[in-house]
Amino acid sequence: MPDKETLERAEQDKREGKAASTQAGEFVREEIEHVREGKHGARSAKQVIAIGLSKARRAGVKLPPPKNASKETKEQAARETSRAKSGGREKPSAKRSRASSRRLKREGHSATSKLALSRHARSVAAKRSAASRSRSATKAAATRKK
Image (tube, helix red, strand yellow):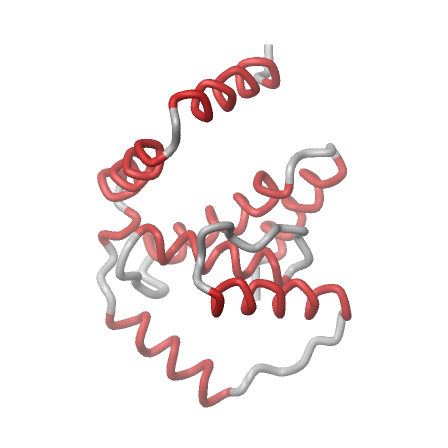
């Protein structure tokens, strides 16, 4: 369950008309903090981001499923989105929840170090085309606070 502050920040982003990815960023930030403060670990920066996006979908952020993900991942994203729409808070399986928590607790905490996050950002950016990066930069410059 996301923190109250995270939900409020995401809600404020939505009111301000910001993109779904910006709203979801609040959940990813929360997850990074959880790993840093030792609540649980993670295998990689990618895993931390995936957990955050999953939480965002369950909280009702209208995030599309990832384009180049596996069929299972896309189905899971669709399930999380529909679950948020229905509003029915079905209680998660305690046994399954405990198992995943215990697994994450055994993982390391270096996945959210500055080095790991910047390395991930660089590798993701490198996979994008120059035109795509340029478009993003132009858009960022236009929306930056003056």
